[in-house]
Image (cartoon, rainbow, N blue to C red; front, side, top):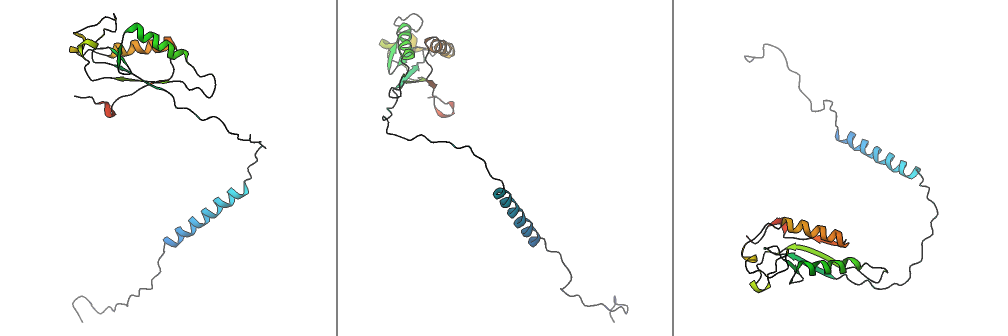
Length: 176
């Protein structure tokens, strides 16, 4: 007899002791859940109203819309498709764009993209947006273009231009 035995005889343990397995139980529950969901979907009958589809016939090919780019330069000047324009010329072009609305499906309205230009223009191209006069010192300093943008948005609303979009560099970064 050993030190710790004290005459008590141990029964041998078997690996056949009862255990509860949860995995098969979970499988059966999900199987029953799937069955009842599908059975419910089949039992519910969707009542639809009869609807006659129109026959598709050949149409006219869609023409892409003309893309126009209006940039606001570092000095606040307006640049229409690469050309500096005065304030009055900008108003005239915006009015023409606002009046050109498509009446039929074949005609497409132009799309105006507005961006901020980070490139300084040559001194002979600089035009002050307020006065329309050439300005040499205009593109030597970068001004706050927020008020110019606000003024442009008012012009767009006043002239009836509805198809326009602001574009810029990803992340709002510039050429800094």
